[in-house]
Image (cartoon, rainbow, N blue to C red; front, side):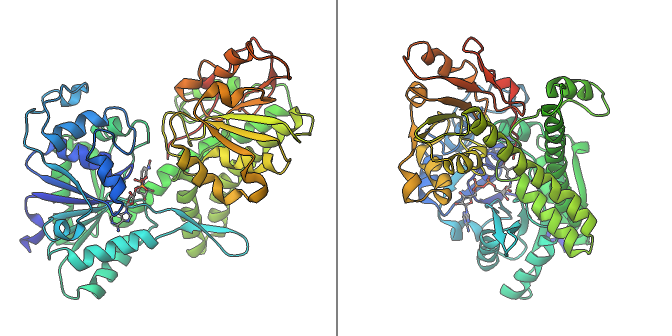
Length: 485
Ligand code: NAD
């Protein structure tokens, strides 16, 4: 019975991505006595985690990785870790050798990707659990008895129960505990979110051994998170609470965007309305920025999970309510694309349209569920001469991969990714700013325009009341909206 109440000495994090990497780094930083192995099956990703050039960009991440991975003496900027001992023995390791690590770990955190899958004639959506299930099976095969298995990935409700069954089948009679511990970080602020989390949610089945497993994990977080912020709940609450957080954030975006459509048809200004609503403390001002809607790998998928859950529980009204949040989001993007077409006199043939920003939100290189893809899909139907893309935060191979599903032999040659904003905008008939990454705050398009001869230039704001602005108006990134995943 004392199996799960042990002191944690060794953690294996499966999946060295946007969640697994930063989470492992912060746990290792604050628990110098715990060895943290981060496992990934992608050797290229692991190599980059072991190099000075990490595979993901997050402010402050390099500093904390250096401390735990290299034992570096780093001066940490974040006040909350000012007391962290420096000159330490390395305790953070990135590797592809999962078997060795799984066989030694007290705690295994599953932080693998759980993308959206589309199914059926109507294009229904749900979470694709293939990768997660494969990783869970691997853990079942190699972990030692008494291992605490942690769901860090965002998963459909009931996954903890399902994983338990899977473990019983693969290793009958071997004791494992499954604990849900969803992650609430946002890309772009991951280190800050992990260092000072609003809450840490730990869900167990509330049996005595389940509670002890939850407590063992809580002790890991208690190294830096104040106890009142660590909430121990049941596994269903924990899994559902994560979906609800994302659904409610996304719902605010779709709500304000629905109002922006009314503004478009009247004299009302959506920014004035958002300001007025947000100033009321009962409403609050965050996530009330109208724009292209939400992208990223999380919101749409998690709302689909919630919708699917409601349907399977025989609650069609609830399913319909939440599915509208996704529908509104898709409509908003189409609406934006058609506005660009209208501003170009419904004729894109032979014209060049430049898109600044491709990542799903500002200051990240993550291209998953990019808002730009839907806009480009609609624009390509109008046979433009060229779609020119520039986003200094993204790798061009990631941009091409995201676009691949909407391209065919005729359109492929008309889409180009540029590494220079001025070249992307040169001779463009329209410049569309998709996200407000810092580099676009001072519109490079505008600067270039004054040097380029010929051609009519039109600037578009991707706010819902898109309008052409005269050349002396700088495109302001702060007017746009895109959201964390
Ligand atoms: P990611 O794609 O960046 O990283 C997942 C990694 O897991 C990849 O590097 C992949 O190679 C690796 N992997 C897959 N199967 C593996 C296996 N069997 N063994 C070893 N490695 C394996 O994904 P992410 O953005 O970090 O998301 C992970 C989970 O966290 C998802 O469920 C997501 O919904 C959730 N989440 C993401 C965010 C976010 O902002 N990205 C925030 C909160 C929660």
